Image (tube, rainbow, N blue to C red; front, side):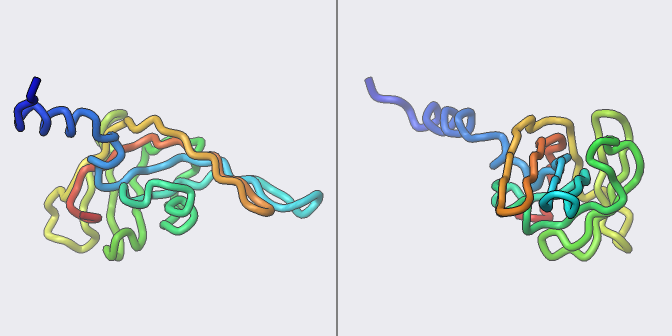
Length: 144
């Protein structure tokens, strides 16, 4: 049986992992570090381009400092230095939508984020560990 080209194209799209279709992801993380009395934990929120969806991507992309990884993204925040853009401003519009704008841009929405992904990455290193959940999937041209 020979499969038609449109069928193969559809099969390829359906089989393609969700994280490769998005432009970037917003991860909520637990980060514990150190040894003994020189240890601690924090809860960073990290933006990661889809083509860097890995532990290396988590460790080498911007932390969103205005947020706590346990508090949810329910207030306005900014993403610094993502994919060559100095600052992306993010405005939660509901519990299921975040709109994205370029800082000092023309006021046009440049992308949207939705709950999803639901992937988890645990990234141990010598004296620290990141345990992150992929909570928001963002669709825009910024990291394309």
